[in-house]
Amino acid sequence: MSVEGEKFAAVVFNPVKTDAEKLKRIITEDAVEHGWGEPLFIATTVDDPGVSMAKQAVEKGASVVVAAGGDGTVRCVAEGLRSSGVPLAIVPAGTGNLLARNLDLPLGNVKQAVSIAYAGNDRAIDVGIAEVRAENGPAQQYVFLVMAGMGIDAQMIANTNDDLKKSVGWLAYADAVVRSLADLKPFRIRYQLAESAPHSAHVSTILVANCGTLPAGIELLPDAKIDDGKLDLAVLQPKGALGWLQVWRKVRWENGVLRRSSIGRRILTATEGRDRTVTYLRSPMVTVKPDDPQQLELDGDEIGTTTATRFTVDPLALTVKVPVPRSRAAAKQRAAATAETAADKA
View 1 (tube, helix red, strand yellow):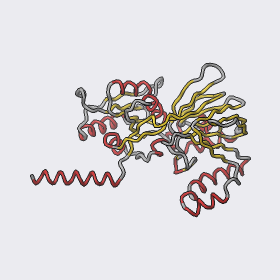
View 2 (tube, rainbow, N blue to C red):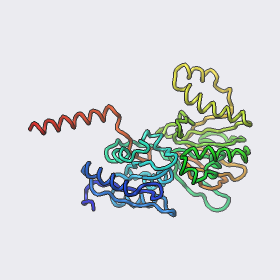
View 3 (cartoon, one colour):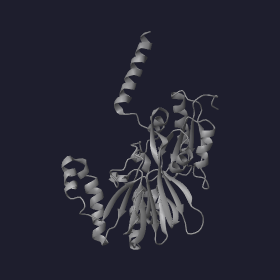
View 4 (tube, one colour):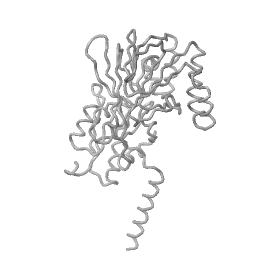
């Protein structure tokens, strides 16, 4: 039990995704090492993947709330922490670990992730908000941190085999893509950006992103920034198999290779506008209305079908724990070593 006024971490963990005993041991040991009080552990449930648990942690006075689980757990804990000022730390334990990748957090190393929870830097990031309207009933509001999608990516999430995910990880999505392509038909949407006239398009997918890096270093939206107060959109309009090859070329070659060098960027500038398979847009708000109800996903969570969704951004509404820059971390280590040496001499 933590002493009143003493710093302590609250840990919201998914008991299915995490090794609870190992997690509790490491977090408790690190609490002692950093001079913090005894941690509070709260397990998520099927009915509540983390929202109320995060709010409970804030009410109890936690100095940091650790989300241990997959992207769904992180998203729900973030929803509970939104605008609270209490930082979110992440112990990635899922298939995609999308936010962790975009923040350069350690994957597969619980000890390192926990250390960042106690001693990392605070960073304010934007939060995406999706107001989702289904065929019947009022609109419901959801938080997303990385990416929302309507079209093939949402169908992919719906078609992903959970058992295959457990055995091969994020590569299970490749199997789902193949199965989704078989039934894929472009659909018509009407979309409107902030302070712009409505547009219509036939698309295979429309993505609304807060940040844009996917597993395997895929830069889907290379210019997306997690703290710029804007959402980045990718409208995919490939025609047939050749069109999908053009999408793949753009994502892997142009975004992943050419953008990294000055010569490559000049090539991209010279050829800009020739490829219409992927259109990039940016706005603090976009409303998307498909002619027919479409599947929607948020950070890899299947939300269901929607007839209209309004996406907005809540700027810098969430504080997250991120690694200390290496140079600063090295300076801290040297200072600690110097102090220890001075203490020994004294």
